[in-house]
Length: 397
Image (cartoon, rainbow, N blue to C red; front, side):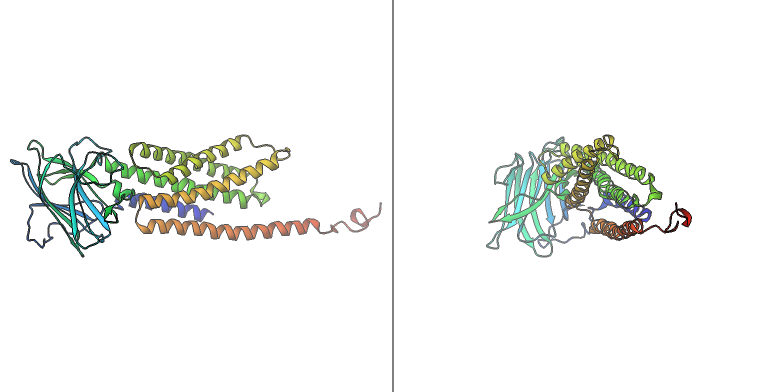
């Protein structure tokens, strides 16, 4: 078991070192050649959704000539690039965004249009923008995805914009709701049109770190320490020499898991409150359930009857049932978290490997403890002949 715990700790350390960069993308930007022979003075590799922005900006006139290039999509996807006039709309950059939308229609033609966004339930309907936009066009290239071209007329007193970019599915020649996983919700940030400097809007980098911290805390607590503590109680208490050490080790593991898990749960609540309009209902509801059940387990520990108490049998049933429910829900919710955070696939595989290893070890220990218990029962039932058959030391009374 000690080896499994060391493996779990190593997994958490590696996960913490790698997750913050799990969504970064690399690739050529300035070397790209447009089929229309258009040239731009600046280019930025956008950090999410395989996207690039090429532009030329004239501060004196406010003219922004741009090309938004979104790769890695198919004809069943729509893409959008937008400017939000409010640089201070940190946590809700989508609201008020003035967007350009493009997708390929079922007849093979490419549709591109302007769409102002006023609420989170937007259908990306066509409408007028707060900015003057001209030379609007788009083209779909199999290898290079969708490219939107346009010329914006911006105020001349500002050189920084808050940009938002997005992709989603197309259904019946109409845009459908985009996914709400991390790459989509983080696809926003400020851009200095003169220097090319970019920054995550509203502490997007900080939110990513909070999401990673939330994931690590919960994976280690609910997903590793909690099952390990249950294994300690299940398999060590069979050995009389381990009593009462097994109980203190079990209580330490479960209490530590609960404390760390509550910290992870609290970061999740904070992330939810900071993500207006974005909800992961299944993940959130399971998390709330886990917190309630975990809290009940803590109180159950404080109210544990003595071994000879008449309610001890019922307490054991409750304690075991609640504990196993917590473990199962914890593992399910961790996979829900993986689907939301979308780290590199190797980390999800690493956790799967860890759970399989714990399961294999539990199966082996289960078989061995049953062997010990049955052997002990047989020895207790065997007739005692060590003192002879005629009484004490072979002498009759």
